[in-house]
Length: 70
Image (cartoon, rainbow, N blue to C red; front, side, top):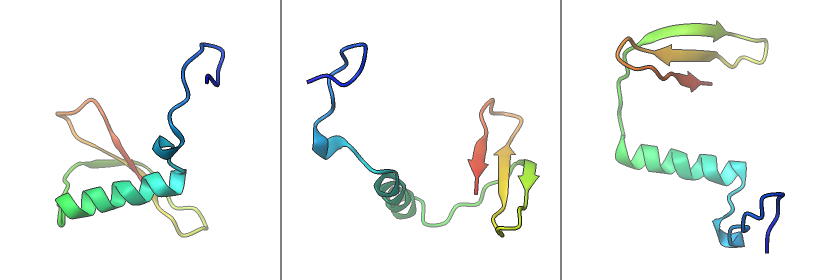
């Protein structure tokens, strides 16, 4: 069975995660393998909306990538 224009086969149903399930599994994986992590970097794009959440990007000079966080 295919589900798109490019005839890509659909993954088996048991391999499809909801967003909540994927976030939970990622959390467990990280917490089990990295119980305490200190991270050093530069904060940028800081936003503190009325919701009380903080949104920011963490980066360093050695890496071309960034870590976006909520």
